[in-house]
Length: 611
Image (cartoon, rainbow, N blue to C red; front, top):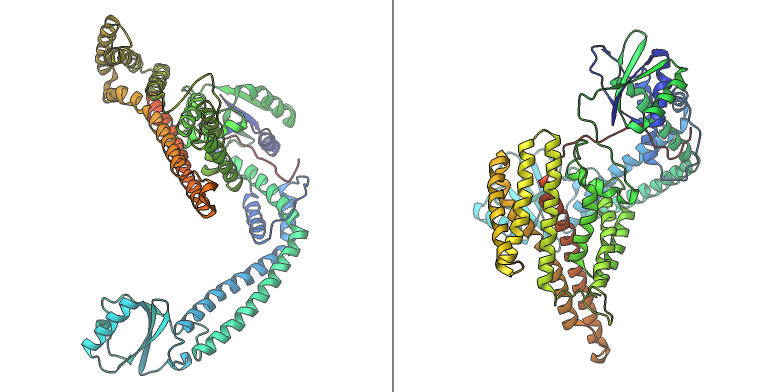
C-alpha cells in the first residue's frame, strides 16, 4: 500500500472526485496539514433529502423489474425528484395504509374484549358513570380462585364481581364498585391483566361490538386491497425509474460528502489516502486526464499503519470475512488466512467424516446461502460450510462411511475409525504439533518485524520446546524413539522451556499452552469417532427391514432418519465450532495481533444504472 497526496485546483474538484470515485482506488484519509478543513458540497443536503424521499417511496412499492438508465448529474436528479407527483401519491397511500393498520389493532383489541366478556350482561356504552367505576380483568383459573377468596374474606361493601369463562383456562372478571372506595386489597397478590373498557369500538353489548368490528374489518380489508392494487400499478410504471434515481442519488451523495475529508486553500484542495502500489500509475494518469495536467500526485512516507487489503477468489472470501469477524489483520503482519483455508476443511472433514452427512449438509448450506443476506454472518458461514461439506464427503469416502454403513470397496488409505483409533489419536495430535509450531514460526517473523527481538527468540525456543517435548514423550511412553534420542530431546525441551520463560516477559504465562494446545487437537479424533460410533449404533438398532411388516418398517424408518439427522446436526455443529476454535485459539494466539484497518476504497457499485 502507498500513501499519496493529491493537489488540484478548486475548479476541477467535481471532475477529480468523480474520477476517484469511478476508479475506486483510494481509501480517503484526512490530511494532517495545517490547512482549513474542506466541507461537503453545498447541494449535499438537497441530495440527501431527495434520496430519502425516493428510498422511502420504494419501501412502499412491491418489487418490480428494473431497466438500466444512464447517469445524470446531481442538479438534474434533485430537480426531477421535486417534480415527481407520483411520490406524493405513494406516500399518501402509505399513510392511509398505516392508518388502517393502526385501526386494525384497535379492532383486534375490541374484538378480544367483546369475545372475553360475551358471557356477561354488559353494555360498554353505559358503564361510564359519575358514581360507579367499572374495571375488567383477565386471569387464569388460579387467579380467579384467589380473587374470589380475597373478595369473600374482605367482604368489601358496594362492590359487585361478575365472572365469565373467557376461553380455555381463562376467565373474564368485571368489577363494579362505588367511586372513592378501594379494591386494592382484593386485587393484591392476584395475577390479573386489566382490560381497557373505554377503548375505541367498545360501545353497546358484546354481540353488538362483535358485529360492528366484523363490518369495519371487512371495510378495511376492501380498502387495503384497493391500496395494494394501486401501489402495484404504480410499481409497474415507476419502480424502475425510482430505483435508478435512488442509485444515482446514492452515488452523487457520496461524491458530495467526500470533500469533508479534504483540506483546502483559496484556490485549491488537497486529498490524501491509501492506494495499492500497482494502481498509483493508473490513478496519476486518470487525474492528469480529467484536469488537463493541472493535478499533482505525491507519494508520501507512511506515518500511520496502512490499511489491510486482501485479494482472494470470490469463493474463498468468506474465510476473510470470518477472520475479520475475529479481528481484522494488520497490514504489517503475515496473513494467516491461507493456512486457515487449508486447515479448517480438514478439521471439519475429520470430525464429520461421512459421505451421507456431507451431501446432506451441502444441500442445507446451499439452501441457507440462497436465503440469507450476502453481507451477513449466516451467508458467509454457509459458504464455508459448503466447502467443508466437500471435505466431509472426501474423508467419508476414504473411511468408507455412508450414514454409518460401509460399502464393499477399499481405498489405498485403509482408513477405519474403529480399527485405527490409536493411529488417529497420533495423527490429530501431530496436526496440533505442526500447526502450533507453524504459528510460533509466524510469531517469530511478526515479533521481529515489530521490534520485539526477545519475544521473537522466545517463540523460537517455544518451537524447540514443543518439537523436542513431543519426541521425548513419544519415546518415553510409546517407545517411538531410542533411549538416547528420548533423553537428549527431553534435555533440549527442558532448557528450551526455561529460556522461553526468561525471554517471554509478560507472555511467560503462555508456556502452559505449549503443552495443552497441541493436545487440544485430539478433540478432532474424539468428535469424529463419536459421530461414527453413534451412526453405527443407529444402523445396528434401527435399520428398517420390510420383513418386519409395513408398520414396523415405517416406524423404524422414521426413527432411523430422525436419529441420523440429530447425529448429523451435532457433528456439523461441533465440526464448525471446534474447527474455528482450533484455528483461532490454539493457532492464531501464537502470532496474530489483529486490530488492523480494512482497506475501504472510495468507490461505488452500479446495479441498475450506467455511466
